[in-house]
Image (tube, rainbow, N blue to C red; front, side, top):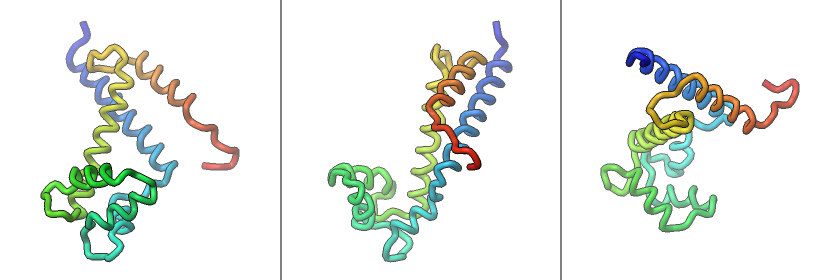
Length: 139
């Protein structure tokens, strides 16, 4: 039987690995920070996002009207009809945490709440296959 400490250590290593992989993917994609995205959406520079500002940006992606309203309500945690930078960042952090949890679940093939070396290797190999090949001379 594996000790709890060893299991916890494997879990921490797996989470760190997932975080590292996620950070590398984000770096490659060069996504804007939450603050940069918020400033881009805040077209009137009043420090908050109205539903109209939010819809304007989202409609460019051809998202249905009701989906936009639902998403906005989820972000607007104090229900004042405006998104503050704090609300926007908090939601982004929750989404990041959800991605980490999803990655861990993807690695934990047997569903026992831990990731062993074989599960981790399989995960890494699977993601190597999914990644596009880098062109020579590119970092």
